[in-house]
Length: 287
Image 1 (spheres, rainbow, N blue to C red):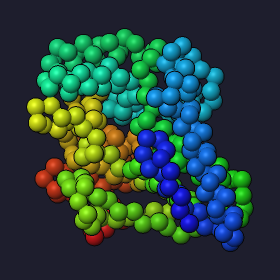
Image 2: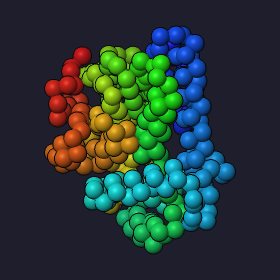
Image 3: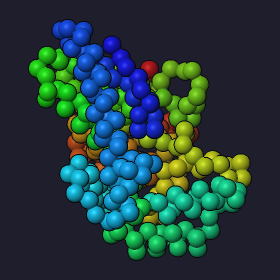
Image 4: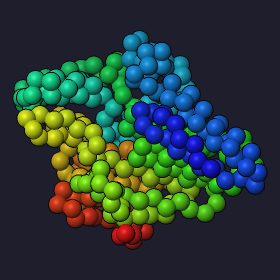
């Protein structure tokens, strides 16, 4: 049985299998309730969220928020700054650029990067979406498994993230980012078991300036939208890691992504702008 709800700014779909249908149904609702609760912690759009309070005051005692902030800081160091949760100034600049139909100048980008660096410690522009979505999905599923011994398997899909726990596997298709709205077969598929999958790319979220599309995934070092690959899909044991690596995967050159992913025991599937693909594992099967 599956339940679909609008959560985390996207569609959430959950499936739980248990010996009794009533147990499975209750577990599915519990997962969605936990996702909604955690969304209220990490939302940048809800002024009453714990993250919004931190952005205003520079302080928090919320254990969940502190855990993810520490994790994000660790990944920023691990990726040499390619993963960054303080992109508010740069995002605002590109929003302005779209409204005036003119790409930012190098001077404007440099000023935004400087302002970001000066205010980083205050956490005033902290945005954890690129890591919190996976962390929330895994936490919600883990919570229901820890609370019941009657569940066999569960998976949760939130936007481009899929998390699986329990018996068996779940097959996930990887869409063609060059034709994201066409009703065509996926480029590849992979079966995941007690793992997480995340996909990042600019095909569905972009700015349009002068008739040209610019990905909303920004390179923290330059402030420019990513143009290395069209999409990056990562499978890892940890959902937050999959989230981070998928984001970084469209910022780095393919060979750099392959090296980074391999170093942390994850696997990736990259779709290049010319439609060719690069994979670190034979688990990704062409469809």
